[in-house]
Amino acid sequence: PACVAPTKPQFETSVVLEPVFTGVDMVRPLLALQAPGDASRWYVVEQRGRVLAFDNTPDVSNSDVFLDIRQRVTAYNDSGSYYDEEQGLLGMAFDPNYATNRFIYVSYTRGGNPGTSVVSRFVVHEDGQSVDDTSEYEILTLSQPFSNHNGGHIEFGPDGFLYIGFGDGGAGGDPYGYGQNASSWLATILRVDVHGGEPYGVPGDNPFVDGGGAPEVYAWGLRNPWRFHFDKETAELWPGDVGQDEWEEIDIVV
Image (cartoon, rainbow, N blue to C red; front, side, top):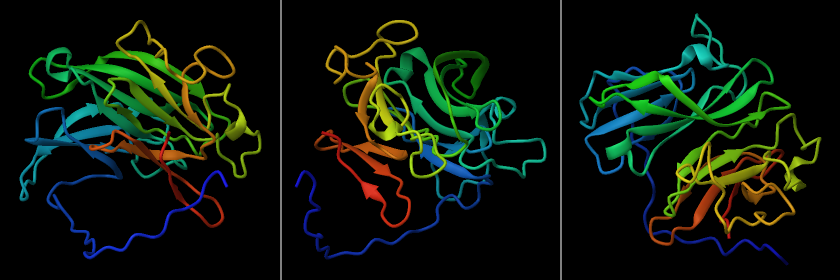
């Protein structure tokens, strides 16, 4: 068989979840991250279209608005009470050279139902306290057939390239077969070089750079890679892939 689950590991210790930063008021937080080389502050992405920043101290109670693009994000309205399916501000990543170029990247949806997925670059003000919201530069966009399974996670790999996750377009059961269509960005993780041209370059070792699929595609056949991460020891790419009737998956991309 091509894929067999390994034997379930036995752990001597258990995992316990503990609430943190309970003094900070957040609305639908989806992601927490820190700037490269700076452990003094946390940045929390809210689905409605904001990013909050606060000090990395257990008793912190105040936060600053680092980014606010609520008026550009589909999933937020003026009442703050409506979130459309899985849309919104879904991902954020700091440029590996953030200390010198002050670039951040975000992934969000806009334009109603089903809408469009957008990956953009912004520039942070020189004081580092907030983002210049007029500095948006679109890296890529993708029209969505349905409002769910937008994916949305973005992260820089150890190779310096930007990895972008997109779901299969939604609905249920992959009705258009995007999961087996490597020519589509849907149901994939893309890998692009945001430092290699405008709006981006394509790494020369991507699997379809010479044809047979979209050159940006790095991994395909995914249902909705909502989150993924790189192993700090092995540099392996581990996506969490959303299931449907019974099973969820944690995969290794090889």
